[in-house]
Length: 351
Ligand code: NAP
Ligand code: ZN
Image (cartoon, rainbow, N blue to C red):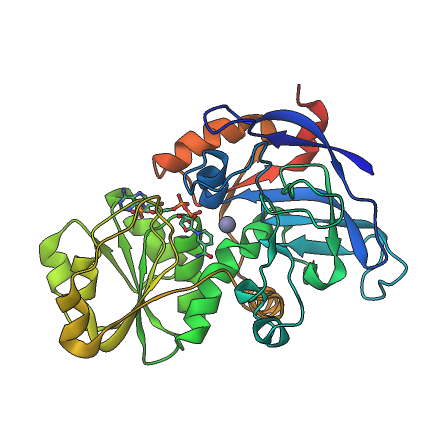
């Protein structure tokens, strides 16, 4: 087994601290990766604090991983040492069900393996994520980072990027469509950039007046302060699609009123508690309410290539691992522009 170092939460109310743990040896179809950068997703915080009630401790979060291949198993021909690669939220799936056969591993009928807090199939225990020095991943779940991309700013594409790209593609965001992105955090700022690059008329909804200028700079055609009822009313019955990225419980009703006939509200944010929906918000105008989970491996590669072609990466604040607990507190105050990316070299000097 490989001896690895990372930052773990030992309980739901303890800060993340340095932790030594084991990973499986590199198997025939495995790729061993030295982790260079890892983005900080709000899901990491939800899991470290057991807000979804399914965490098994210790938890090492991190599923926006970019690194360098250090070795490969004998059955791996598509990656070699030195390659720049990424790992997102998934590290395995059944590979036989209808969803896996369509490259939609995130909807695997027999249960996928998440990058952290999932059962580890080879050595038992749980999977441990990217707040660590290295990771061993099946070759089918390793992504290729296009040449020339900034690695720190590319890491967040592996979750925030694909989670917004996938529903934008599925619900056909593009020219002639009016798309609303709700919340300007990690997911939201990628949603704005991607919807704009796809050619949709893009409107950002934010609770933070201080983010208006940034919203426009990132590609929004308009920015609406969601607490301003008058501004909201100007957009009544006009949207084809909403992507709701908000991490906290909030009232959905004001947004339904802005969807046009047969428009769709897609929930990607995953607040701790259920959110009520008024039947009439859907009944009138035959509106749709949907959810969307990250994206499959082929679509994640497609998203990375799309981002390389359009010059898109995440706006990141690079931090050492020692600052991760502080980063969590800042994320809760919506004080991040717009993703923390951990420089994993800092792990070597962490106490
Ligand atoms: P984040 O960076 O913290 O951004 C969330 C944004 O939501 C904030 O920046 C803020 O934007 C808005 N917000 C926060 N509290 C709010 C409140 N009380 N009322 C209204 N708006 C509020 O989080 P993230 O990393 O983008 O993740 C967002 C959510 O998506 C999390 O729940 C995460 O677990 C989930 N997620 C889901 C998937 C999936 O596959 N479906 C994948 C990854 C993450 P403004 O300041 O602009 O209002
Ligand atoms: Zn995530």
